[in-house]
Length: 340
Image (cartoon, rainbow, N blue to C red):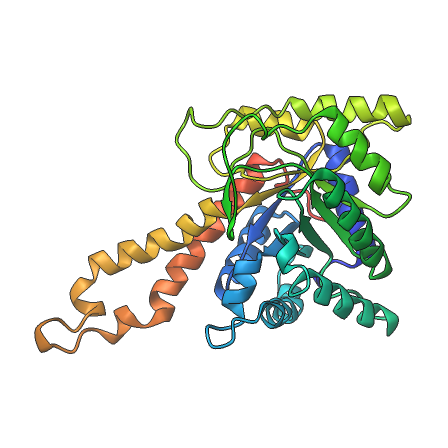
């Protein structure tokens, strides 16, 4: 199937919220990790979201120029072609973009999609993320208003992060402390600034103790039940039931119970990066250790072309990451929910 149109993406999100499931949002950094994600979704018979961070886009742009927009556009165009061969519907998204990178990433990408829409085409991406969690909430929401208006004009959904997620993501770092919990007041201020759909649809990355990256049990206290408080607090103020479409950041290592609670309280998208990175790399490490004298020309020997051919270990990496994506679909209840 082709990449989701704006209308289909809205339908995907509506179905997820009504059915209390969420789409895994898989970070990719290459055509190979893109195929791994697509394969994982197809094998799970789940639609899904594929996303590119600023660091991923820079990597995709090549180490000669490291141009983020070039990298993101190139992979998105590639995805529009190859995704048609997979029997699932995919939305393309850009992940965390802080204030200092907006002019070099999200704003140009919004302009590209606006130009496409003006010509009667669909946008290149279906959603973009503005990460203003390092700013004051007032500044965060002011920029959010500007970006939401541009997104609406390009038929794109905006994702906003209003309060910090702990850990580190592409150079944006937040301490693990009590500030990692969004308050009802934060949510009300967000609704006042961005509306509840009448100004354009947006996804909300609220904080309930989330932390990016790898962490040991006990270091992070997730409170996904907090999302219910945010939904209810805003519903009471504005008279709209379950007003938010939530995003679960820092999902790697979460328990089944924590995920289930998040789904019940309005999460429609959960980001996965750390776990899928490991799932991609682990089979490669295994291959290299088992075929040491083949992948290296040890003691002047010639090695074995069949073992160091990137296609040999690349196929193993793709299969490993695809399996982890399929596992994520099961955890998020999206397995078997693809659009017919």
